[in-house]
Length: 135
Image 1 (cartoon, one colour):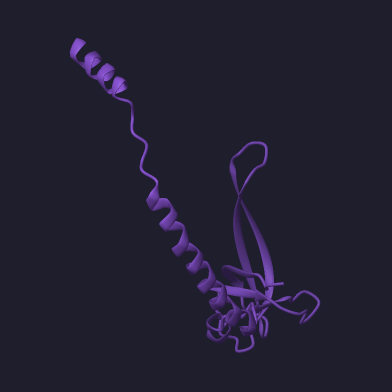
Image 2 (cartoon, rainbow, N blue to C red):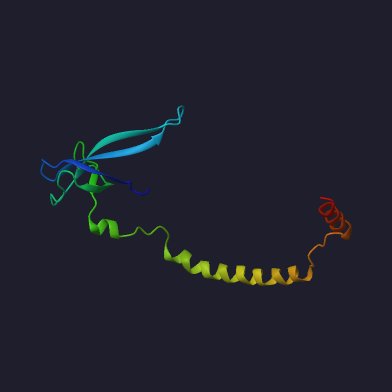
């Protein structure tokens, strides 16, 4: 399961290697259909004590570090590293399917070219022309 990433403001950086982040989210009330702001405080692990009060930071879910800390401050390394979802073996099979689909598409347009577009009967065109003249 992917780890959640939240963004918020640092409220407290007084403790060693710990910051408190205030995360604000907006959601629509189910009955009244009005938007509500809800705030939650998370304690996050800051190994280098880099964050200061008032900074806008991103935090990511992690294993429990202490009784209340379940989040870690996102650094440049974590943000830049994309997570691979599928193994490379399936990617090799995909081009073969693409070739088969392309061959099937090449056959279909030839069948469509034989059909001529349907034409409107001349009587309808004449009726429309007389209505315009009458106006």
